[in-house]
Image (cartoon, rainbow, N blue to C red; front, side):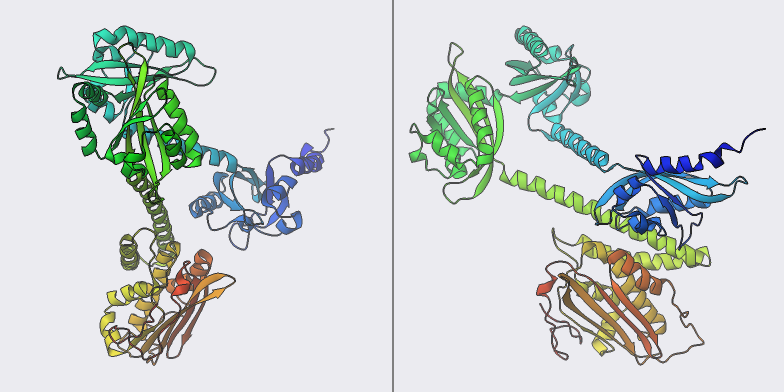
Length: 623
């Protein structure tokens, strides 16, 4: 006779195996909708991953590890799959018991009884935080390299070992007088003056043999027949331990330097006129003692050292002391490389001697050789790059802010559409209600778009925007609507869109049924800022009174619709707000307290009732 089925005997062994498995394992009951699913089993790895003890997880739901950045779209897709009886694999952000976020990759599969009915769900989870952080760093690094390649102020190209161009930037196209498509059909030999071909091949061979950068000065011929002098630095590209697949060529235009050298030989006066007119600092040092032989007036403006004091044997030490300590070694190393015959561009910061201001310097230094080819002088062009650096930093901040605001807006629209789809009776009903709320979002997005860098939308302008869209100027002027509270209460950008929808719901309901409707009544909108637990909180009270109720016509449903659900559920969940909503006999009273932006504390003192700061019949407190 056959013995009992293996699964009956093996079940304890499988449970012990799951308990000691390296990946986190969680088993829940079959329920999908709230209050389920209920966790029935977790292993030690699950406890270690989440920071919760086994007894804290058992009987809870997986929502215990979810938080503000948990991807709601992923959760929605998961729920759809489970409803269909399918397994699901996904990735999102969860939170440990101590609040620390982590990125989790998981699979969830149904557990079926012999009849095929789902009797539970098993999930296998893996912490991939380090991997995703590494991926993000690699992507950011690749993006920076692509950006640097694209906008670099020197010519950059990648060539194969045969010298054919694989990739070129715009500066090289400008330098060689050819467009990108033309260069990609050519090779280095096609644009190099024949007299320098042998030296070019020798430099490539040296770079490939040594694995290090090789450099040479050479002459290129342009498409129009003119020539351009350049310094080319050739560096092998390839993974460690592997033969290089291609070469990176950095091409620096030396035409200006050659012309400057000729001008120096022909006329010292002409060179000094050129230096005096240049906005960049020009300088020449003796290669032996590194004493300054010439410095243009821009040198004094950039470094704050009087030209009359430059030229002594210790002037290099004086300049080096102005370079910030973290940048000093690199700047001095660049100078040593130039003395050895390289052309080097270095960036560093200096604290200007005259006023202590910190300036970014982009310094291109090059050797000046005598008739025998020895470096006997060092020349340089120093550019004040402070403004360019600041512009780049501002651009990064603006791009990050745009991405952040776009993500917030998409999340709000997604949540709004889901809510309205669930509560709409028809497509026309959905379209009208959706369009109305999109208009509210458009208004608040217009406020966000007008902000300067680092600025915030304030509560009073948000409230005024919503009331004015409904004709609120007349109500304010007549005294039917009063507004009292401090001006300039800055709202966190992440809260503005959802909070604006809540104000819109209150205002439109008041227009249909309440204090702003033909039934009469008054609306008092009051707000203040108070700190709770070290967090500044904005307290808003929306109080309608004196409304003549008509319970038989167009009365809002008891228990509320979308607006009430938004206020009582979405605001606490999404914004960490505290809310209270009451539908009284003579109107609505709603109280909302939510975190305000840092810096709102200064906008606390409201005007006494009856004071008018210059508004149209309404009281708004000044900062």
